Image: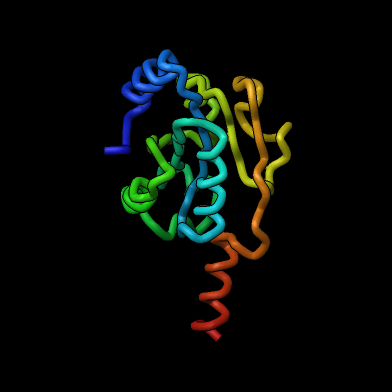
Length: 153
């Protein structure tokens, strides 16, 4: 089971880091998983040995993005857990993963290219932070808009 609670994951990552494993952390809503997410997660995983994905809870997504999530948290976690490049998934309730990053202490922090490195939450806590290239036109919002244009006009 890839889904872990924060404390269990903290202990597990400590053990892996003692074995010399490099832990990469990323986070997001991952509301409607698409090709942009997949290539982003694959690239994030290539930066280390273990990829941890923090997922915003439904309540957190609702505070950040009106009318979302489209897909409930348990289903988002199930889809992310099915991806071979994802090693662990953890859900967080806060609007940002700052406290989670502080607890897990990853070696590498990654976000998508729509984030500047200096604006990535938790970059002050992690030795390496990367903003990976953004694939233009591949976003959950764009998919929702495409559905609206095709089926609601």
